[in-house]
Structures are given as structure tokens and as C-alpha cells.
Amino acid sequence: MCMRVEDHVILDIRKTADLVEITVDGRVISAYAGEPILAALLNAGIKVNRYTVKRHEPRGLFCGIGQCTDCAMVVDGQTNVRTCITPVKAGMIIKTQDGLSKEE
Amino acid sequence: MLQERDLVVVGAGPAGLAASIEAAKAGASVLLVDLNLKAGGQLFKQIHKFFGSSAHHSGVRGFDIGKMLLKEADDAGVETWLGSAVIGLFPGMKVAIEKGTDGSEKEVITLKAKKIIVATGASENVIRFKGWTTPGVMGAGAAQTMINVNHVKPGKKVVMLGTGNVGLIVSYQLMQAGCEVVALVEAASKIGGYAVHAAKIKRAGIPIYMKHTIVEVKAGTDHCTNRVVIAEVDEKFQPIAGTEKEIDADTVTIAAGLKPSAELPKLMKCAFTFNGVFGGMIPLHNENMETSVEGIYVAGDSTGVEEANTALEEGKIAGIAAAEALGYLDVEKAAVIKKEIWERLEALRMGPFGEARMAQKEKILEEYMEKIGTPVAEEGMVEDSDVNN
Image 1 (spheres, each protein chain N blue to C red):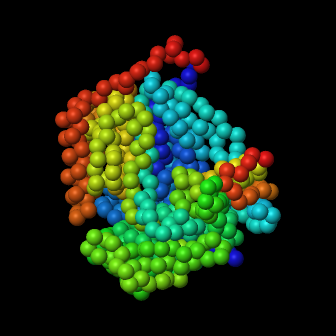
Image 2: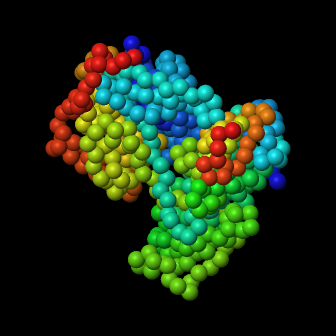
Image 3: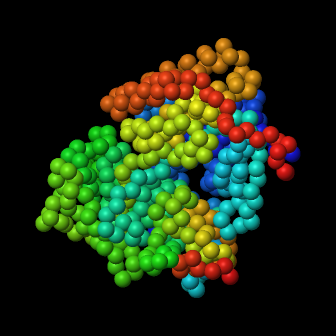
């Protein structure tokens, strides 16, 4: 699945950043270094970022600007990382956050 | 000793950037702080051309205005901390800043500001229906950020809830990005935004369901949005049983207006007022954009939801007033510049939408004069010697 915006009539969407690999729940996906983690996930068709503590409900992108925390995931062992405002680095290990999860 | 700056500006959108530029050009030491990785606020997702006069960048796209402001701020010597959140304001004009993005080392730095300008913008309103938290349901602004800033589509088939200018413009921009907009849904009997934007949607043949709302979003086995149930509403905006229709879509974008983000002035006990036209509770301010607390200024959407150009002009006033209060600008000279800006603001607040905002702005200024008059120094000032650094 590719969800990148291509051939835009107004925007110049040529990417100059390096294409790197990150791992999401064991699956390796490609991402541009420096883009928000969430953008790479959406491109790969991954829309659930976490499940809530009490009712185990799925949550995904909602505000996109770091305010709502619905897109929080476990990144390199650290919980509650807002993926919409956290830039991709090569080799990141990302996991869907289950409830509060645990620091690893 | 705490680090000190003449002016700390919170939020690097059009208001915060304009305020920083004006104050820095006058000679103030300015620190501009923003949570995001890039300055410019929402300007970089506004890929449409602006309306208005040439004094207000008509015909220029939002992101180009953003680029101009970033360069001006740089040239004026504005110090900018990105990926940094102001997490509190404390007595003695102390600003606590958390520096560092999630997933990296963070540190909290507290510094002292002689003046503070709060330009923290607004947040999107939500409409709650069954399934509104399902992944795939998001703010229209969130979808706009994904396509225009991150260049990734939030989904393939989109239902837009709301036909104000945000709903109309983002629908069109989703189409430009390659998404299929399958329907717009509007509870009112009239389209909320400008006819010129609505015409683009109509020309594309997208159905606009008037007097309808979303009653439910259903998830598939992947836990994500896959069906959207809409229904007609009665005069009291209640869904009418038996009128439901199901739409095949994986994304719902909610464009139900915005409300001012003014938590920081609240922390400093600034006086507030409720204003429906401006989106909710807003800090009272005078013609200098100064709140009821001396030295704390507001500008842009955090003082009432409007648009980028009004935010820019209000930011300029706040920046000039702060520089003037700091002694960097001659009082008479500042008065002339501020008057010019207020006149430009008046020109912006015209037309069917603008006139209502103009009237409300005047009401807010009047209310300030009645209730506050002159700003007072904050309560509970803490002397430097009382604080262990």
C-alpha cells in the first residue's frame, strides 16, 4: 500500500530526505528520515496506534499536531511517544501501545 | 541566576512570528518557542491563495507567507526554540519550557521574561457520534496537515462533516492530494462557507447532504472506519429515525469550528470573557493586545478564532506594544504604527463574516475598559532572592 501524495498541482513534493527502514510490531517498513513517524505508518496502511487502558478501544490519528495524544506508541522502549510530532530515525523499533504499556 | 529575555513569545504561527519580528526589529531580545518541529503554525498547510487586498498578501499562498515570515524572523535576529513546549508560567514572569521532542532527552528550562506574548492558536472542535473515536475519524485540520505538510493521505474515501470554509477548503485539498471525497454532511440548511469554495465542490459533483449529520461510524475487522451512517435532522438538529443512509468510507474529517487555546493566560489569572463568535472563552485585552495582567499580551486565534491575516496584524500590535513598554520604541511613533495596523484590521474585518467579528472585537475592547481599565501587575510576585536556583 502506498498512501504518499504524488504529482500535486500546487505542492512540490520531491523528497530530499533519506529513505530508511523502521520496524513496526515486527514488520519492516520504509520511511523518510525526519518525517513524523505517523506519516510513515499511514503510508504503510497502519492506522491503529494504541489501545485504551480500560476498554481496550483502538485509537489513531486525531489532531495531528501533538495535542490529543491519541497517536501515542512505544518507540525504542519509551511509552507515550506522540508519533505525529516525533521524527523518524533509521532503525527505530515501534510498537502499538497497549494501555499504559511498560517502559522497557 | 535565571536566564532572562526581554520578550518570550509562545507559538510560532503567524501571530507569534509577526510579534517576534516587530519586537526584535525594535531592538528587544526575543525568544520564540514552539512545540512543533517547524515554525509557521498552520500557514504551511494553507496551500490556497489568500483573499483580500495587496496589503494582506491577496493571491499569495499560505505557505509562501510562512516562508517570508521565517526569513524575516531570522533576519531580525529572533531566537527560536522548536520542539519545545511552554509547560507553565509562574509568578515573577517565569516561563518553564520543556525542550526536546518525545522519544529524546528532554530538559526543563525556566527563564525570566520581561514581557510575554501568548499566541497559541486554537484547537479543533469535535462532534460526538457513536464511533467517533474509531481510527479514521479525525479533525479536518489533522487531515490537512497530513496531505499538505507530511504529503501522506490519511485514507482513500473521505466523508467531510461540516461545510464552513475549513470543511470546503480541506475537501478540495483532499481531492488535490488524490483522496476521493465521497460526501459532505451539513446539519444546517445553508452552506457555512464562501460560495466560491462551495462551487468547487459542486463542480466536482460531490454530494453535499444538507440538514444531515453523522449518527454512527462503523469499524471493520481491522478496528478502523469502514462505514459511515448519516441521517436527516429535524429543526432541533436531532436525527430523524428511518432516514439513515450508509456510506462506504475509511475516513471521516470533522470541520466543526475551532476554539481558542488560552490555557497560559488562564494560568496567570488573566480576566476572560465568553464570546460565541470568537469560539468560546477568550482573554480580555486592550488596544495594545495586553491582557488584564501587565506585561502579558495575546494575539491571533488564542484571542478569538479568525484567520491568518488578522492573526498577523494582531501579532504586530502585540510586538510593537511590548517593545514600546520595554522602552525600545518611542511612544508617539508606536502610536502611529499601531493606529495604521488597527485600520488594516478594520479593512480585514469587513463583509458578511468580518463585520460580525469587527463588532465583537469592539465589544471586547469596551469590556476591557469597563472591567479592567489599566492592566495590573500579577499577584504574588516572587523576588529572585526567594527562589533557589
